[in-house]
Image (cartoon, rainbow, N blue to C red; front, side, top):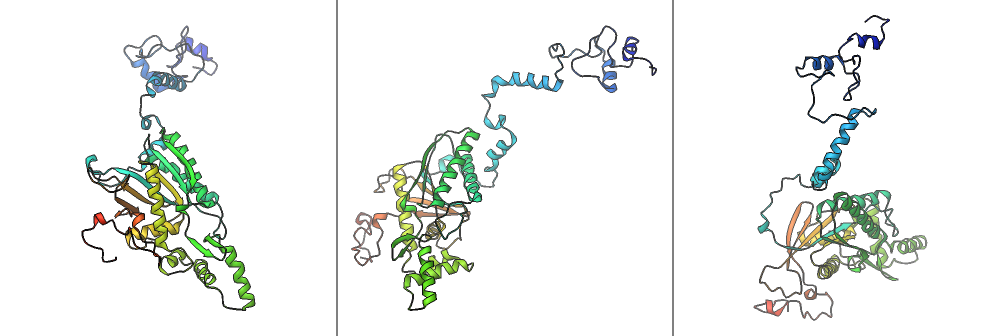
Amino acid sequence: MSDHDTPTESAANGGRPGQPRAGQERTTDRYEAPMYLARYRDRQPDAGANGHSSPARPSAPPDDGTPLYLKRFRERRTEQAPADGDKPLWRRADLSVQQALTEDNRNKEISAPAEAYRQVTNDVYLIRHGETQGYSTDSGLTPQGAWQAHSYGRTLARRIRSGETVVFRHAPTNRARETAEQIRRGLADGLEQYEKEITIVEPEPMDEFRNFQFVSPDGLKDVTAAFREYHSLLEQYERSARSDRPLWLVEMDRFWRTQQGGGDPIQHWLTIPLLHFEPPAMCVRRFWAGINSLADEFPGARLAVTTHSGCIRAVAVSAFGYDPGEPYNTEHVRIKLYAPPAGSDTGRTRGGTDATVTYRNRVQEIKVPRIDQLPQWSVHDDWSGFADPSELTQPSPHR
């Protein structure tokens, strides 16, 4: 074709392969086919008038200017639409959802057969609050802490099944309450994404799961709530030096100076007898009282309790016999309560006597304590009910 020939004249004279000839319509499957494709079509034995073999696909509608890739996409979408509702979520979800659904299953754990598992009556999560704005007052969460709690809720949504019940309870502090609310929101978002339906019991405060308490001249307080009073009085004593400081002020001063110096104040509380701090054993006692109460009220439910690191750590120490360390923000200690064996009489209205405590990849089997049989450690204790007479064959040496 010379430089002065027009495309129409060249086509009329049978120009280069792939160009429409005189009286021939343009093909609708591709615009301006490249040379290699046009020659390939010309070599086909059953090539039609348009230069390529007849496809198995129905004849395309007249060209309306829609790109071919968009036409094919619409055809596939129309063909697959009726069957999409029958496909499982992992087949019709995007890549991020598929990765999230399988993330918790990529481990090397050897699973026992279903008949070997004991029935779990309640699955309890003792969750530390998210990152807080400070401990000198009853502060709420930072944006980072809110994100931590929300992410925990989305992770929880992957691990539960449709039809379950999740009960939220929290310690009566702002940081614990906001953590429970953010976990609740993250759980709701995850349930919508993973298409699960469960029953959620909204967050409520529960005194059994409060932080360990401190006895000040004004009464029983949370450790952080007593800080302001301690700080103001300590400054007065340091300025005047008029007399010896009271014992409660000395103990609080040691506790806070341990934290300010980069030490571990919870370890200080767990290992050193303090006369004005609630003992760790009493924290464990009331935590178990709260767990047993919720288990009786919500049998079969998952119990998500947002509380404080000191009490969570005390529960872990009582189960393992050593201190596993401080939990991170939104890290949890997990307790599984097991149903009693068939035909056994535990002497309880609901629940069994066995449980497991899991923390940082260690699992410990324990016996669920009977709160009504635990000593009060008071000089007025009569020790009645310390042991069930029906369970004893000989008198207890402690009586």
